Length: 216
Ligand code: B1M
Image (cartoon, rainbow, N blue to C red; front, side, top):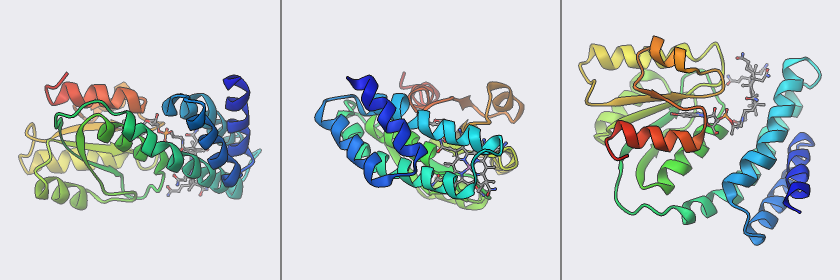
């Protein structure tokens, strides 16, 4: 039953049909399907497919844009459900989250933010295309214990290193920890740029954030 729904979800993203993706997300809620399962087993399958097609030159920018919009429409329905499911009530810590400068991919970063909020973190999501100075000044303003940076492009992942170098230069580490993620980010990259933690998905990001802040 849910397998069929997952297939329709993936297809709605491939077709860039935001009305349908939102409708299918509502059906998942009505059927008590865990919102994260709907995202990972349904919608993400579609967006990955379009991404691969785009990478191979079989799909083009408008399709990528429409797939992104359809993803956002589905996640907008599921986000409040994820928050509702959050069990933690203790404040876990303050996190400043951003997609790095030059990069406008927001879906994964927003999902990480939602999961962190649902798990009791106080999340300051700066959005996309955020330069190092904005990220650092926000972290100082809100007295954040953790900065989370997302990068989806091989050309922008280097920006994560810039923020870390700037934090080091200003003597702000280890007071402020750094977690990195995004499709091209690997454990090797995390070690190379001396980030404190890395996760390949949103659930893992919560685990790493808790570990880094001593709340695991
Ligand atoms: Co873009 N794009 N895109 N795109 N896009 C990719 C990333 C690409 C891999 C597609 C491809 O070619 N196969 C490719 C990058 C290639 C590379 O760098 N090697 C690419 C390209 C080339 C581009 C443009 C340059 C295209 C162009 O203009 N010619 C352009 C760049 C614009 C820019 O940023 N300056 C561009 C634009 C776009 C859209 C705007 C159309 C759209 C984004 C819409 C939006 O966000 N509002 C888009 C999309 C949708 C994609 C793909 C298809 C899907 C990304 C996504 O949302 N995934 C993507 C292909 C792919 O990744 N399969 C692609 C779903 C999301 C839930 O996963 O973001 O990976 P993800 O997040 C995961 C994990 O990575 C992790 O947890 C999340 C949840 O599990 N995670 C973290 C993420 N951040 C984390 C942070 C953490 C921890 C974990 O700690 C802080």
